[in-house]
Amino acid sequence: MSCGVVKFMPREAFFDSWDSLDAEDLADLVTGTPKSPTTSGWPKITHAIFHSSEKVFVIETITPSFSALLRFSSDDPKAGHYEIREFKKSTEIGRTVTVVPVKADAKDRKVAMLAPFKLGFAIRTRRDAAPNPERIWLIGLMEWKDDGATDHAGSDQLPSHDGPT
Image (tube, rainbow, N blue to C red; front, side, top):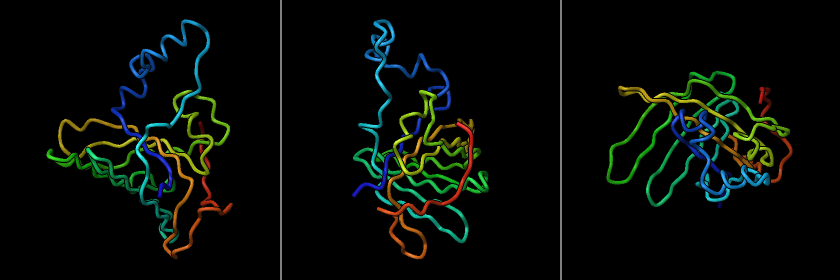
């Protein structure tokens, strides 16, 4: 069962919109019929827990090529961390730097695809090991459990957060 979706990429790919456009996106821009950004094909979040006492989310995804775990808080952005395990490769470990909640009416093409989700986040992280590259994580959540084992699959009760975007 999927709790939502997650995508992470090098920071440069997120901010350089021309590099992040595929051939179809470029063709759409030329013809004047740009398609809406989508999360289809993004890795599914397999576990999502909100620790209400700490105001911290923990999400996990597992794909055939990697697994990733991210712990983050919009109340204390620098308190989070992540781990990416690429199968048959080394493990990348790092910390969260910035956590930005994505509002439901977000218009920015880089995050607009998260608007349909109950909660959306754009998170900047930095790898612990040199040369310390940064990543941007885009997260869309539809379901999660809290540390009291409450299922928020159909709930309108959301953790409170405010943010730009």
